[in-house]
Length: 101
Image (tube, rainbow, N blue to C red; front, side, top):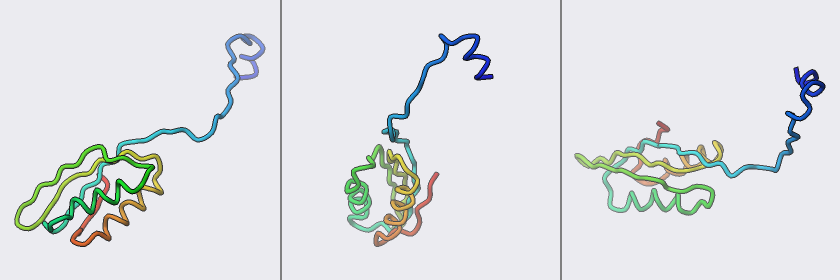
C-alpha cells in the first residue's frame, strides 16, 4: 500500500525521523500494606523522592488495628524502575505487601 500511495499521492507522505527516547511518564498505582509504625510513610516517600526519574503523584494511607494500608500513585517511565521500586518498598521495615493495581 505504501508504494502505491507514494506513487499516487506523494504530497501526503511525510518523512519522519526518530528523535530519541521520549519523556513519557505514566501513572502507576501501588497498593501497600504494613504495620502501623511511626515513620513508615516517611520511609516510603523518601525512597520515591530519591529517584529523579519518578514523581509521587498521590498517597492515601489508612490505619486500623495496627495495620496501615493504602495506595501510592507515582509517575514513571520504565517497568524496570517500577520493579526496582517495588523491591525497595518491600524492604522497608514494617511493609508486608506491595502490589501494582
